[in-house]
Image (cartoon, rainbow, N blue to C red):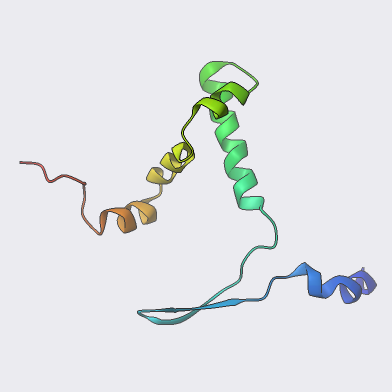
Amino acid sequence: MAKQIDQYGDKLFADPILLNGPSGTIVVYPQRTNNILEQFFRRLRRDYRRRTGNNTMRKALQAMLADTPLVKNLSNPAYLKILLGGKSTVVPLK
């Protein structure tokens, strides 16, 4: 195993990316795989199968708008905070 790590070590990890933000420089280590997207799609399929009872999503994927999967991000509080700019809702209640 150590021999393979030595041989393929440069391909196992992606180079870090330096981002300059208001709080200083942040180092981001990008994933070399698309595992996060695969998990997201797996969860989307599971939810669809549970809701409809259908095993295939082909027709549903062809019919949905391109940004529809982004609706899942609305359940993430950090995403909502960025999206709403710290407000509690999009439109203030009167």
